[in-house]
Image 1 (cartoon, helix red, strand yellow):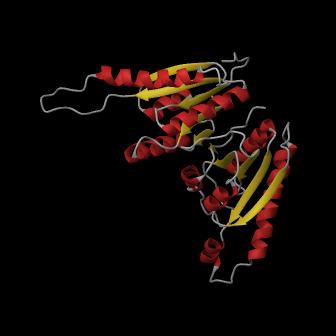
Image 2: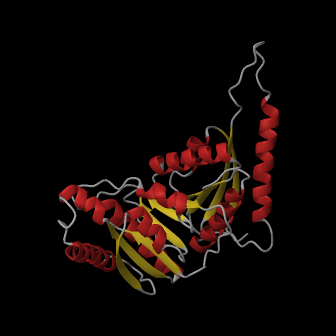
Image 3: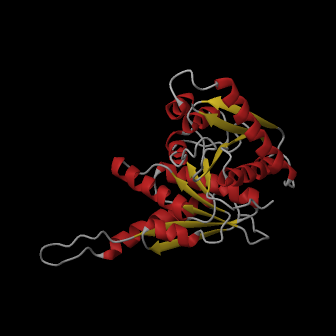
Amino acid sequence: MTPTTGNRRVVVGVDGSPAGWHALQWAADEAQALDATIDVVHAWTVPVMVYPEGQIFDAEPFRDEAQHVLDDAMAFLARPDVETADARPRLVEMATVDALLAAAAGAELLVLGNRGLGAFADLVVRSVSQGCVEGARCPVAVVPARSVDRWRGGRVVVGVDGSDISADALQWALAEAARRQADLSVVIAYHHHQLESLIGPPGAVDHDSVRKASQALADEMVERAIAGADQQPVSVEVIAVAASAGHGLVEAAVDADLLVVGSRGRSNLRGVLLGSVSRHCVHHAPCPVVIVRGATGHAA
């Protein structure tokens, strides 16, 4: 492990699942690139089940199993073929969301896997990611349950919609793409069917005008973000897509290293809420997804 020189921290939650392992590997790469320490967190609790006689579960086997999961994670980070910054294990007897949010206070990034061990565990993991996205003050990265090559395509994708939170997501993505020396694709999506349902019958919407207005909005956001940035990506492209935001972003991220979205947005078109976009991306994107909650600038 490489000693770090600053106070940056990346926090990763591990649970022994395949997605948890991929999240750990991705977090280790990110911590190394950021010259940050990595806090490896595993939370455990004793199941709340009481027998008729009043006997409760012995906590020791659950604690031992939790320690085993954490020890395996630390052993992985100690392998000579894994380059990472200083790693610190944190075994916490606490509800998972509470433990991760507490650990992530003041961190650069919180990293999670998006799948558990089995269908029920998947539901639990999804509720954990949702709770962390809603409660974390730092960006949250959700890594898919498949092998992740951090430098697969040299491209970062970010979704914008004119909202302040999407501007924060753009700022974070711009800094991340510059640090990776990657290309940045800025995607703004507009949905014809949604607009027609709001404005009138089919044919009431001038699709070309909507596309041009969307493109202009994204161009303006990019100009502002670049003007305030210390470093630049290799290239920046703006893409206006005629699709729902979730589908458009997932499609744009097919060959990307990373997809960045705001936790909630608000369309400039009659205030259409886009809060489900981040959830759709987390569930369907082929690459890691970073959800930026807002006012979370990326340190250079």
